Image 1 (cartoon, rainbow, N blue to C red):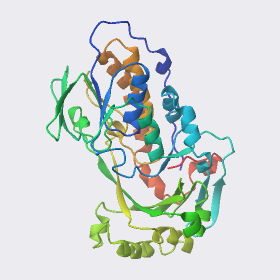
Image 2 (image 1 turned 180 degrees about the vertical axis):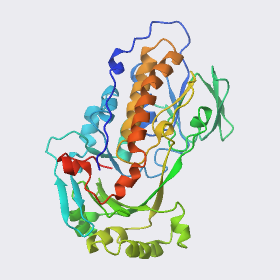
Image 3 (image 1 turned 60 degrees about the vertical axis):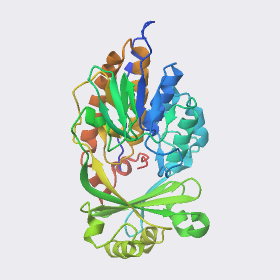
Image 4 (image 1 turned 90 degrees about the horizontal axis):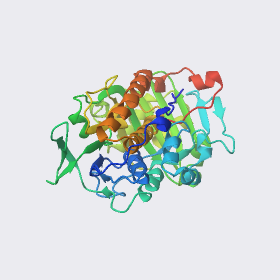
Length: 400
């Protein structure tokens, strides 16, 4: 696929520095301890600005953080540079993960990109490793776990009241919604809700692949392998720790498993259905779908309406998927971290929170609207039997 790129805007370097003021320090609360929320908190703290992060999970190890992702040099890496963590990122990242194979469903290799040894365009890092890097960079006690937000209340001019499900109520002068696709903060700004795109991912895991699944390990290589036939697709990607994740991509109703009389835990039944639906694919492809270790994970793909905009409020704003949920085409975390970087710098460089929020949204909203339009119905590209643009142009691909 031809993954769009986004570039940091010049205002990162040109925003006015806030004058010295005797006004009380603003109370800033970030909802969501994902890469976007943690990046924003880290950059705020580097500028001497107090912030708290609230997350619904019980702790940093409450759940698996997901697979691997690539951080691009023109957005995600810029945010890490502002966070003072870019060198640490490169020590953890896997540049070899930029390897990419594109194949015909019958198994023929159509395109193969092998990265240069020092290639840093978009190296891979496991989501868990990135989260740990950001968490460990924050001041102790910054993240308050087990704080599930129920609602944001109070007047638009502030202060806002954060009402948590455990009955806790806190006041804030700025609430930053970094709480993902089903954001509670978004409800204070917009009635928009994510809609099903018509495309669903079914995720399968392979452990100890070099010993237990050597053919699949060789097939995927150090990066990823992809194929599609117009109605269904497959994307396999190596993670660290000798682990591979495979995604069966289908254009199906959102309740496709239930419609087939299956539940997510019905592993054998799902395997039989996949063998039927991918029956004309090569045997090795079918093994990447059915030789997995453990259960499948059903991941229907949702997106926000295009464009997603809202009436400015001086005390609440959004970043990442909370602001512009799009199909998973390699830009989500990168955009979230770029949003976080720009918002934190705006707060540091403006005299008031209201001015900072307006400056941030004046750049973020047009950029995200443009990207939403580019990726609208983009999940269909994952199913296209045509060679992606990066193959036709001879460019290296971006990881999904």
